[in-house]
Amino acid sequence: MAQAPATRLLDDDGTFHAERRVVPRTDWQFARLVEGRPVSDPGFIYLKSGFEPGKIYEVVYRAQNPAVVGLGLAAVRDFVSYIKYEPDAVTSARRVYGFGISQSGRFLRHFLYQGFNADESGRQVFDGIDAHVAGGGHGSFNHRFAEPSRDASPLSTFFYPTDIFPFTDVEQTDPETGQTDGLLSHSGNSKVLPKIFYTFSSYEYWGRAASLIHTTIDGSADALIPDNVRIYYFPGGQHGPGPFPPARLSAQGKPLTQQMTSPNDYTWAMRALLVAMDRWVKDGTPPPQSRYPRIADGTLVRPDAVRFPKIPGVGSPGKIHEAYRVDYGPRFKQGIIDLEPPRVGKPFPTMVPQVDADGIDQAGVKMPEVAVPLATYTGWNRRDPDTGSPDQLVDFSGSYIPFARTAADRKRTGDQRPSLEERYPSRDHYLGMIAREAIKLMKEGFLLPEDLPSILSRAEMQWDYILK
Image (spheres, rainbow, N blue to C red):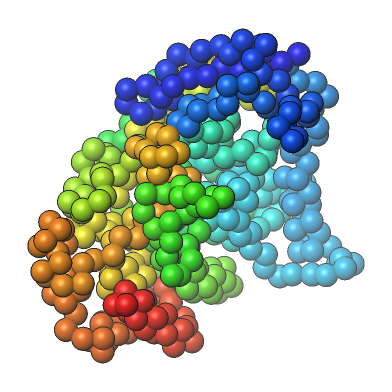
């Protein structure tokens, strides 16, 4: 039987730690509105007074008859092993790569953590894995009442077992709990470890706790990265590249974001990295060295240390998503959650990239449109005030904030960023700089030569758009 849903306001620091308030059972029901009247439906919740923007509503209930989950991990392992090693397989492969975006990227991290890259005969399964925009997460993929679609967000799906220790590939000991673990600690011998790419946009640092995969557990230093691992991140990108021309994210005609979303198209680099992965596995050719922000050189900092410039109409970055020490009960290692809601402890120290004078992240693989910018690209975008909680981030979104066209425009509005006319004498000058950055990325292994014409064509389109 369902318990009354709890409502809690965000507390003073903009997080979800305020005390829950119980909504009387007579004020809500499992129902949806049909012609203005509530009709019973277990898939919906109806509240007499209506839901208020900026509040979090929770329903905690006693469930029964859990579906079987976790078989997908074994099924993927067994199918890949079958096509690699069985002579009578319906199809065959000499090399197999696992590529996952977001949820499926977290699936691959969970796959590695639970030791599934060794088949039942102890042979290697995937030769290479790219867990893309997975952040620091695992997944709700292999326990009783698991919900594989759950991720983690400041205003929804928080405290599900997704962003949980361990985060790094190498073992670390959490000083708060005394637990020692690593993502690759259960993978078996080194012969079954795949080559691994972790690829991120800027959003994953703000919204998916990505820094935890490459820092020490106390946030004081950069962590060791194994030889079979590379980390690449794309400054100014969001969880998935936004459309061009850019626009504010909206739903039912109402804006959800304060700024236009980031159109930074880093998929060009993803194509080149797939080629690099294949060469690494096939003949041992090393891929490009990792590119990500580091504590040691000051390009990875605490959120309150970000030096974001003054831009008219744009506030400071919103509240970062944090991962917490969460206790689901004594049997969680056996796949059983006994505490729901769980006991929540201290957050892990989560960090973000430092920015330059334009507000663009300093480190990483900068796509030509970000290296030669017409706007500020960020990995965060705050909620429109009409949706409530305007200091919180919109899930999966970055920002695109155009530069002023002229110096006079910039000075009139108080924009600290140089204007377009102060940066680029002409359209041809701008396109020449784009070409130079693209060729540089080709030489470094982050772009394919055949993509240059398309990248230049996109740059022409962006210049024409911004000058109109």
